[in-house]
Image 1 (cartoon, rainbow, N blue to C red):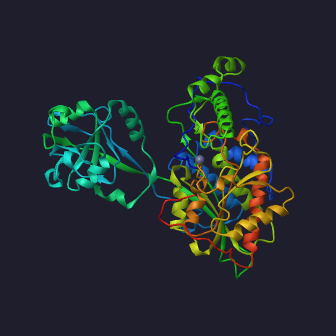
Image 2 (tube, protein in one colour):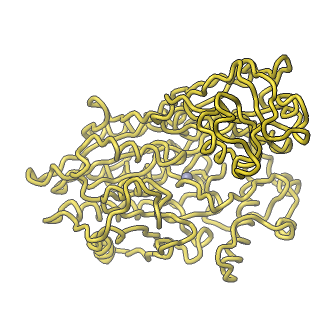
Image 3 (tube, rainbow, N blue to C red):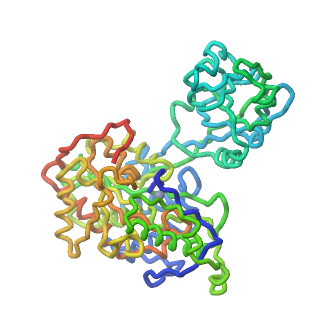
Length: 556
Ligand SMILES: [Zn+2]
């Protein structure tokens, strides 16, 4: 599941620690794989997840080696099970064109003869496309672009580099003919900007990548004085500065990423042209760039922080947030040394993503295995998509639904699983072995929501559904935070199955030994039953609700 902008992750600090948490009987760190069977079982799920969320998968980040390794495992399995490839060119893979834009920190830049160093004096921000050249272009101080009484007219800055105070966006709209912009940056913010900017944020390739656009450089005050020739305090709108030489070198590096797409043909010749889509995401967060942390300390800290968060929620604070106060941090005990007297530190830098979304990915394999190896098959066909790039911005599901390898109109419903391996009482208030959150099941089709309920009633051990997170305007905004939404925006009815958040969410500690395999397998089994009933229906599930705006912002 992708991070919510509203929720700041609990800061992981090795300084704060223990209180060993209660949980299920501990599972081992490694597990010897056993042959899997046609049935959906906890043992199969365990074998698969200890492979898929192993350190050797490097955190399965989209655009990196780990993402290729994770998808290679899934592809091997669906090929072995005899599914029909439905990716590009007769393969199981659908390439998703991700790129990592990067700036060259050694780009040569000077104001007249005064050299400026990227990351110390300035940093490019919001780089779009190929920047217009600034070599030989003079700087002019244009004032505050948002205030027309304190700035220049658009004509006065045409062909120049506009140094502006205030908002860069206002500059862009006021001065379309400026060659580039300079803004003033508080020196204290430079390290963060540098770390963020040089990291390179992998994203979908867009048409904008080939545009020529206006560069924006954020400058610390001493560099502002260099480009103006005088300190900013001595400048007035219209003050002419120096001429820039050199420029910013940037590049878009392709970041290989792929969906895995596989079909099980339906048994009814008249209906097999229609599909029930089942999905999960194959990617996770990769390696921790800031370095390794001690696993046990991190886990103890995050569990304590989660308990505080849950307690606050129960006290009725409407949306308390996950940041901790100084007192709360102080109340989380304390002494890493005492924990480490019990066992040595285990340094960890790999985001294994066992629950997120290793759990959904192996559940999808278990469902595929069951339908591939047992008869009769459902009347409609099933299409399984393990999406890439979910964590980076739902890119794989966006690409698959924008460029489907089967007819989009032939998809009657999509069932998405993301994080289905937890949901115990220690993880979620009201959690337990039969806990399941449902999101969006009636947002496009009342009938689909009814089918999910009806199938549950027929289960040997029905789930207790939690619809709380499906409420309109819920602050967690989960309807918009996983791959199903990319289908829903095209009017395809969806149901999202999840056991929800927990203290290991997007942490180095989301590992296979903390997964509840019988819970995971029972959810996979249930989703298979829902898929079968939807696939065997004598009509397409009826869409009776308005479709969202295809290109609009998702709203829950
Ligand atoms: Zn996630």
